[in-house]
Image (cartoon, rainbow, N blue to C red; front, side):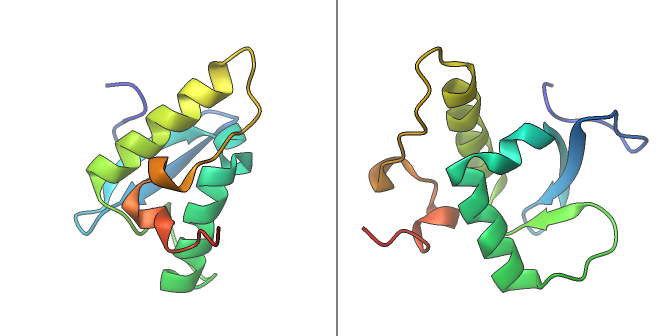
Length: 101
């Protein structure tokens, strides 16, 4: 499955993350971290887990929400007219708390 890998080395330009309470592992391009939706998720991770972490980055959302978020970021990243249009109604529940519109 795209974005999921077994334990092991992560190739250059990619980052391992753990999602949900069962800590399911995904590997994402580092470039995703610059997207506004992922930035909100990173802020939620900081608020939930703090800065100190050993191992892969932990993200505080369900696997389903993460997959929806990743699909939105992939679509936006691969869109030829990407302008990072972010609408609160399209955000995964794990990032909605950070929206102040």
